[in-house]
Length: 142
Ligand code: HEM
Image (cartoon, rainbow, N blue to C red; front, side, top):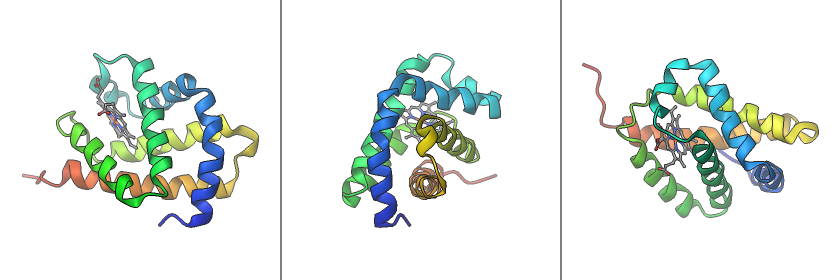
């Protein structure tokens, strides 16, 4: 669950992430590929600069959606549906989350603290929970 206080600190810190959209977006994938080299394969035909920008834009939508739960959930379900068929594994979400939190820590630098860390972890847990529910709902192990 994301508390009202957590929503507030996320909304007030996010503009600093946006200032360096390109750098911050690509940083997430650089970290992800260090942790999970096999995930590079998913992006072999992808412009990572464009991908990074789209990622930061998507996070911006998530931040705006914090105050609008009906949009928040609907957007994420749509985003998740577009991820079906990319070949994601559930554990990628853990690494992706770590890479994302690392990017927030680097980009928010001196204003980073435990409250911000916990707030972003809470948001990411909701986001990843919804996305994984959609992507892996119909996959049954043999
Ligand atoms: C918070 C979680 C995530 C967000 C916000 C996110 C966001 C996005 C966005 C905005 C796109 C662009 C296309 C579209 O809008 O449909 C995209 C595409 C993609 N994402 Fe994600 N994503 C997330 C998690 C992941 C994870 C965990 C992986 C796997 C490591 C992944 C792999 C991909 C791939 C392979 C594409 C397609 C790239 C292409 O078109 O070449 N995503 N994602």
